[in-house]
Length: 428
Image 1 (spheres, one colour):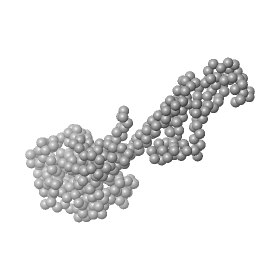
Image 2 (image 1 turned 135 degrees about the vertical axis):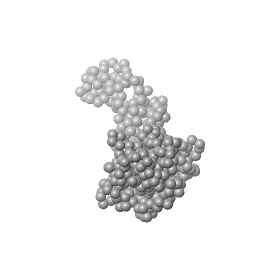
Image 3 (image 1 turned 120 degrees about the vertical axis):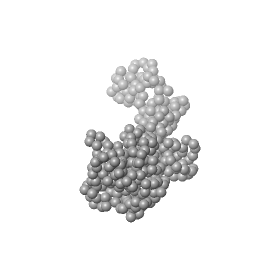
Image 4 (image 1 turned 120 degrees about the horizontal axis):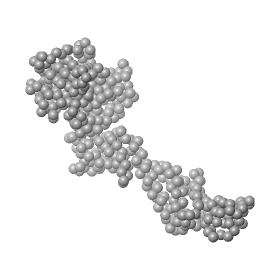
């Protein structure tokens, strides 16, 4: 194998540039050199042997009596050196030597090869990041400024994590490692840009897939996620195997699995709930840790009226309406929450279906009513899970506030009475 083949093999290994692409670039460069030396009207063909690396240049010449152009014509006598049966006006293919190429032609050929190598490098890096699109990548913080973080991605390129895509309250220093979700790889006139995020919902989903084998192999399916990045996430899971507990698989022994994900999200609370094809049951689950007395679906509308015990109203709504808001996003239903006394005051009929359709004692642990009182503050909520604690306190996936604010304003516009949840709180 020739030196040029060895060199191309080395470039392919180190730069990730296809050897075939480089060979085609070399042939193209020599075609250009032929045009420079012999003119654009000449008929030349450059071939590079893929095994030996030998380069040959061929010219098609016409057999004539009198030569007026040495580059395009040859005498009958010369032609019969290549083909003893050659006749006038025949086209004869002859090899020409590359050493006849001039200095300018060689420089042009070299520049084309160098350009091809650069383009090949960019293309290889682009293909690499396209293959990682919609997945997690670990970067190293290079710079910290007011606009966000400059991050090195696998030592192949740098990108910017904007402040808007950072989880509120996170702080990093130069040299810190950070897990990012590749949202998109976009081409631009200067090359391409890798768009990364820490607030994208699929960041949490990918973290669960990496941490929990039952999720990655499809035994446990993530059905829905709602998230307020940096604060709390609710994730609905479902088991495709009746012998596998979806919530338990995600939580892990003493919460070890979910706690690893919480650590990656810098302490963000995660509530893992069991998904149900029955919307009423799903809504009840989504409002955990609050207990629910009844859920009444409104015919023809994607909305529901929920009744909770009087002492659980604040817990169902959550601080600044967060629990109710996340439940609405998770289920896709507008949820109107009232206490039992409020429901009776307004003369609304409701039914307690939970004992008939869903045995909560078989699903979750008991909540301490004193711990979750009407003055519930999520800051008092400890994200650490233990065996005596309700597994629904954990949740999985991350959605950005900006992505869901508009949808939420339209979908979740319930007005609560003065004793429950004020309109001003809902808007927040």
